[in-house]
Image 1 (cartoon, rainbow, N blue to C red):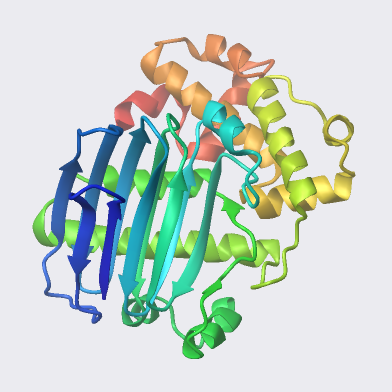
Image 2: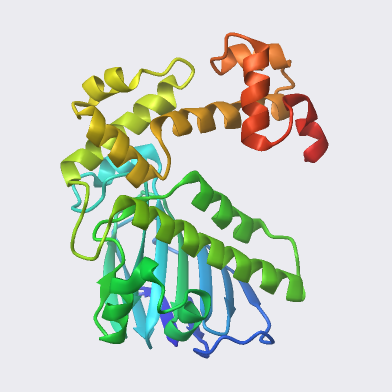
Length: 330
């Protein structure tokens, strides 16, 4: 497969890679860092990893004026792209069709194609791109598996298709895996094995979320209007997780019935409303213990627990260790 991308009107390539389609256990992992500082670029940083049948890239870019990013793919590939927007950036793009949250992803089968994408000035784009050859994808996920049966039919027919009819929200677990890939300090064979294991883990998280959502190509489960309401629910929980609204209260606040709220939130964000609040509390508690050196009692009160023992029980259940033990694990 051959993949390349550049900014229209510039000589430098963002990336240009020609890789064998076949998975190879002995092919070394190639690692690259790219930085471009030239008008109209305000910021452009790329970190790339590649091997036989696999290309990964984490990129952050920002421009002073509108530009077009050109892409060209030769060969059959399965592409997974994770796009991250800050809240302020999201306000600039809410008018665009198909964008329903500040973090989104999908899995697509792309026979050879060319594309041209408009980039909004001053908005910072952060994304993680995973491109796998068809052969490599089927090395990781059995082609006869029911978890992607309709997707496989489209692949075998050579039809450009997306596994989910509409992009889904990136979960905390997906962010963790992407961060693990980006920050891995291993080298040589160990890094290749580590990266391959994380690619498979990321695919499994995506496929699991899509299965839970009931998504099939061409048939969205959640309407665009309801997605906007679910995003509002997440914003309210992000702001009020210390004393969160009940399901009934949250349902009224976003004007969505309780069933759609519970089912849609689980499908779109990969966890229940209660699970999301627990995650926010636990991650905040861990950060306060590590970085702010707060006592367990202070942390319990700060994240919404009336008693220290309640935080201790929840922390142990979530992380597998006591709050007092957290410093020993980092």
